[in-house]
Image (cartoon, rainbow, N blue to C red; front, side):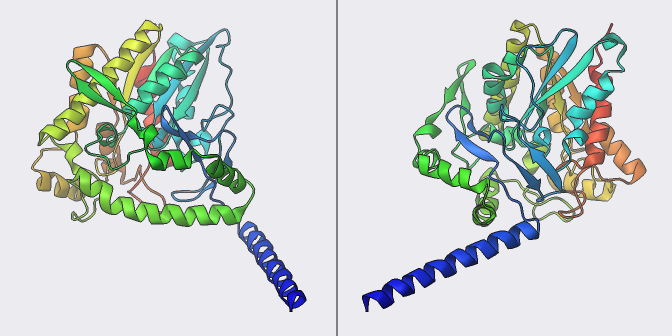
Length: 395
């Protein structure tokens, strides 16, 4: 009887191994790829995993490689080479740009275009991308101060996304795995309590790191992780934006889960506090850059609803909000720029005019939905053109 049980166990184990091998080979054969791109970080909440690589197919389709420093970019030396004009580009997923090939990203094209700038003639222009999906201005500021400044940038460019206002407020965001700054008198106080939470400690464990490492060479682990992320995405879609409130879910033609509150003046103390935090963080970054002999500029990136080519779709949202246009964020940041002496370039107004005139979409992909989501290649290209005109230094 014992021999029978042992034989049965061996056969079962062999069958499971065979199923695993067949499954692994099958996933590789069909080209399935879903790397675990991120890892927990006690300062920033999370970072990209150095040297991770694979296909990104949630929006668009592009092969992404993370450099040894932990950013989606080619490797760069800390010491700035002689004759190089360096740009440190900070931001979230619009800088990370997994949706397009790296050389199609706006920051890559920006460096190419700026080489024709008269004031930079004869100099090599090098953009370094420090973008990580989901980052808010708090993480951008901490990353600038701890890492980006070590690359000796001549220009620090903050790519500001509209949802950064949400990301900067613990009261508006459901996520508890990030640092927050909170207004404290006339300044800001850093809250890193996320590092003590059980979920962060669990994901920081050696066991979880082994799981992430296994995903680098096992597609089955990637499949399990993709399924888990799908469940988490559905859960967050029903809770995070409900907490943030003011979404466009009920407005036809507007991207679901868009927080419409960013298109109008703050309606309560929570939103005003989020704006105060955001403005103080940007001013903090500008002062830090100046102390380190770097120029500082803010690029206000477009949101899909703002640059939809259909004027009726935009007016639908404007009427629902009772606003004359969708550029409140742009105007408020431009006003901040005037008060603090910060260069601010708002991309949405010009992109809106071009989208309507040419009937083109700057956001969205065929495998997601055209007109929704992140910039497509055309959005990146046109955004780089606008920024190059604005950022070309005066001789």
